[in-house]
Image 1 (cartoon, rainbow over the protein chains, first blue to last red):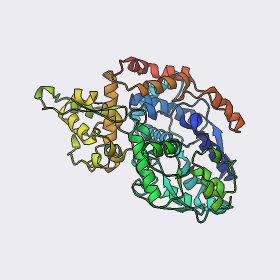
Image 2: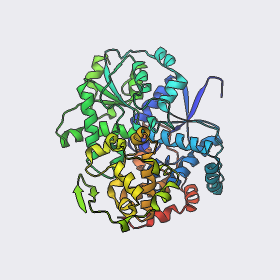
Image 3: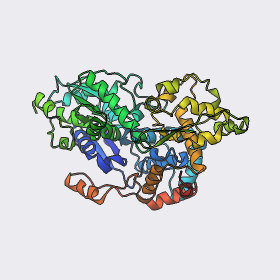
Image 4: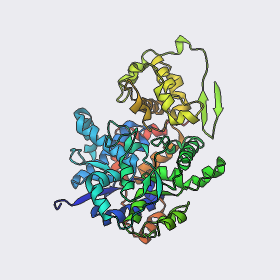
Length: 295
Length: 183
């Protein structure tokens, strides 16, 4: 790797290729603009998180296998989904620090010729943007300031919690995504219960609680006058965007809050077109917001 | 047993006089030996977990503090059979805010894993697991989606390696776990 060159395996996870391609499209476009190289990860599998409630061991094995694949090329992982980033990062740390657990897992991995060595890192997209690319470089790359646009952010639990493993931001008062949003010129508003869960993980078990949780967050976001919501998680995005009209119908509300993946917002500021950033995939159209910023 | 119907999944609440014979005094030790369950005895029932739990706000039955207390008391059957156990969103707010560092969400995961061993696997997890074992991905991504990537200018989606996964998971008996009777 040339000095100063940023290069990662992009970890797509399952939800993004399944139904949130706009997040992937806009991420690739933005990273290309910022000079970050992304390589496809061969034969990766589910990060492991969905299996943790069924079998902790299964989760560890799924995550460890992904880590081994990245280690073979000695390349760190950048995940787009906070669930994947959180899980892979947690297992990476656990296996690096706990010799007994590492030996146990390596014993299993051996049957497929794999071994965990502990030589790479796992980061979420916003960590790469904040820590490796840096706010300075991002600000310098802005071609079209989004000044005047007022938005709110929603991080998604697993980039923040448990703090013991993620730890790069304060889960009680997260600042990294806000700073990244403000680098585009847009204003990022504070609102009540900012770091609260969107409810998505319970969607397979209960059909009402997740919608009630998302409704509550959308209400708080509407109350402070945000013109758009910015997310960095495919599941949160499905709750706030894909399901927004369903929430409106079911719970008799009116929101009309366009919800963008952060790289879509950043992309607009970097001079990319709405088409390039797959903004047409949004159900709640940001027509007025785009007009306001002159796009 | 009082069943509260809320939005599809049943939330089960049990209110009954506790019988000493229903309690398994060894249960808490069993839990404390499983990774993640080590700190079960440290809980002093302050209720921070429940009051900060986003799910508890809208659920009539899910109360993490109760789950921890029932576990301490050794009400094994009641805890493991409880459907509300599965309502935890694993947002880790309870874990991060617990003044006793109990790692509540990890304990709930330990309890879910035990419930699975006892034969209770909510259907959604069987669907996710079979997809992972067959394709590597938690969802069965339709052919159409995979083809559309080309149109969208995206690189082709890496294929999973089910043979590798089968080899890795055979020794932990993962498939057997799922064959257990559901509900």
